[in-house]
Length: 300
Image (cartoon, rainbow, N blue to C red; front, side, top):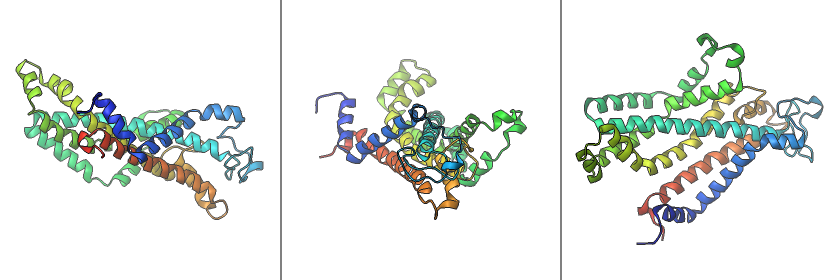
């Protein structure tokens, strides 16, 4: 047996996965650059929401590193602002979905019986729903009819909340099924039986002894889901149901570029490339974590 803690051995296995390491570096760069976007805008003296018609469709230059769009707004700054929105929505929605799915899955697997059957039928129903049309319908709901002021309803923060809630309410099913399957196996293990014999309550058994032992699978599933959520947010924004202009997101940048594909193709290339790289990087990272957290996946 190799020396070192399980975490250290997992880290060594992860470092052998070249695409996983490259994806982690790429995502770290995107994340840091997006977080530092306001500081970069202040240093460059550029506001990504202000239009300058005298500088519309400028090519890349020392002033505008990736050029400008049809309203004279800096493409690089909007790309970074959009990245911050997409990453924030994806991370929060993925964590919230994983939390909901983990609780539902561990309760379903531990209790079993009719409750388990009922939860699994609800899960199957949610999985069977046509996701994109459902998301479009939910995103199109006028929240002002719920008593929310018009200014708040049309704000960027409300758009973020709306997308996060919609994704979380529809994206928990995969994690729930995964955790349920592991709970069915774990609740028959000796350490859970010992906890039960010592008087541990069902709640303690579920959340103190069983759920922590599903952490590796939860991490992998959550990481793999983030790429899909980035794509989902981009689709909603592209359809005009997500982040609204003048605030930037990769999806609404593509919307603004679709009529200029032939005259200014780079306006569509940059956000499209950002979405592609982010989604594929999260998928590679998830694969690498799956190998790293599985001791049976030792690489020769």
